[in-house]
Image (cartoon, rainbow, N blue to C red; front, side, top):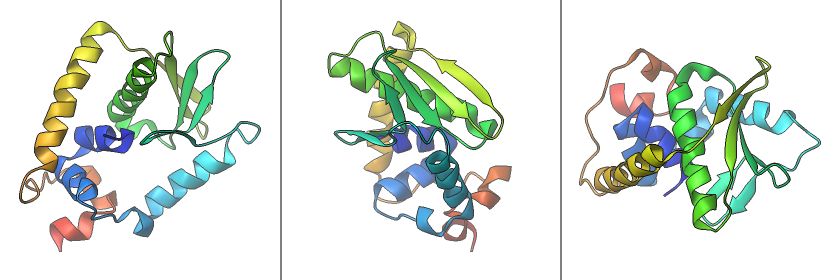
Length: 160
């Protein structure tokens, strides 16, 4: 399970299925490229991309036990929050307790604190099971036809 899969679960189950089944289109997406540039050029004095097993944290401040996830826009903020909550749960599973999260939108100079409560932990367990179910499907879920689909790196696989 990865944070990207958690994020995609809240955006589009079809995108999740395609990504998890090695149909990866992010390298062709201008939006993904812009997001990567925002992440790489923000907070340059801090170490970026901390790898913990299959999880890649944008930044982690060990002193304050804060996970920082850098995003270009709050348009899909709920999926961002769930992604950070998942990262907090992964660190808790490694015995690191008292971890909090923060979503950073550097272009907007905005920060959103993220916490993980007991209810969130239970929901994440159910979400993880549902993600495994979706990934195991023999074909991708149906197209959801949302306004944000037009900017998706998988657009051509769904609509052309």
